Length: 88
Image (tube, rainbow, N blue to C red):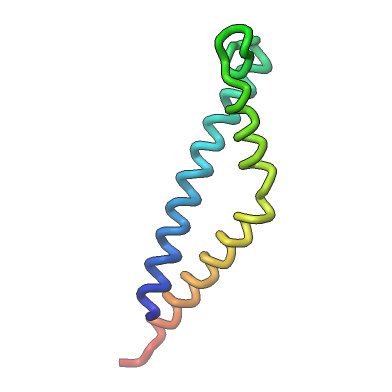
């Protein structure tokens, strides 16, 4: 059971890191769009405003997914410490 918890926590952390990398990339596109008048989100020039809505939806809810990351890191750390400190 401990190994399943450790692997589950590790997978959750990997998915979270991948999602944060994607969010950082999209926020860079948003800054580029606002600073240099690019056409990523402007529908008049072929952009998609729905992408902007998805960015705000994802980044507007860190109170939901951030505690999950913290809980997963705590569980992973506790599992690893208990596995290493077990006397054999």
